[in-house]
Amino acid sequence: MKQVWRTAGLLLGMLTGVYFLVHARRTLASSDLSGLLNVNVLASTVCLAALYALAIPATALAWVWMLRSMKQPASLCRMLPILATTQFAKYLPGNVAQHIGRIALARGAGLDLPAVLFSISWEMLLTVVACTHVSALTLFWTGPVLAHGHLAAYRAPLLLGVTLAVAAALLLAPPLVSRLALLRAGVRSDPTAVPPRVGLAPSTVLGCYAIYVTNFFLIGGGLWLVSHAIAAEGTPAPGVIFLTGAFASSWILGFVTPGAPAGLGIRETVLAALLAGSLPPTQAVALIVALRVATTIGDLAVFIAGSLAMRQLHNLTSPPA
Image 1 (cartoon, rainbow, N blue to C red):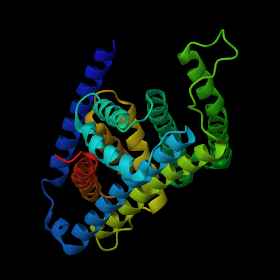
Image 2: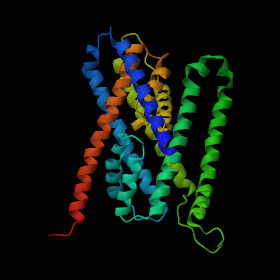
Image 3: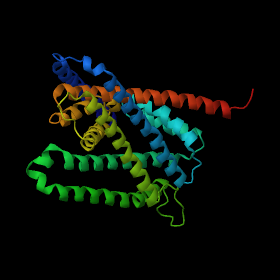
Image 4: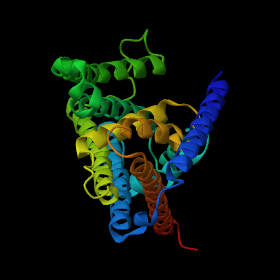
């Protein structure tokens, strides 16, 4: 059944990717794209790639924070290269290769398997919650439907409801994870048994959550720079809050689609729909293409740096011949 869902997700990603390519071709067919190669656009795209790449060290910092809370001998200089090298595998179909490689390398670094598994599960949970929260808050506040439509009067209650739901999720997650660890260890009938330490303190949960929220705003800020560089004279560019929410919405839909490598096709199509009322079609497509180029360059740069760091660590820990 899992294979069926992954195949369906892969096909969906391919279909939406083809749709976006056709849409982009029609939109850009009669447009002069020479302006996309000017210094401002190229510089802003490089800034977007750099801001995107910063999310990897930030995520590694949160990972180390969680592992240390589980009493694991984790260090940033060891975990960052592992995350940097394995995250590039998200471009493979299935969206699981990066997690498998990360678990294997973390186990090779001397970390306990339950802690590694639960730390990655915590990361995915908090990232999805953070992404959903950011999407809801930013789009409810600045989106065209709620900001100017008939639902504008309900904007504040909706924002409050989403925030309360997120707060409840953050409060309930630690005891639920601890209970899951207890069940996984098979010690339900033994009250004296000690489950593996995989729970997190509330301060750790909130701190990691703040890091993941910051990651989305980093990329939203980079998109804002590119949108201003691309925008034609006299055309107002969307605000950074709206662009952050639009990216977060496209990211979460690409993430939950099984089989789509790095959300390819899904994210572009969703982002194009969200930008339809905020940017002219040509500029919207150019911004989306710049985002995909910047994220790919950022992932590649992080992968190369992580590989070099892994090689250096291997040379330092290998016994002399």
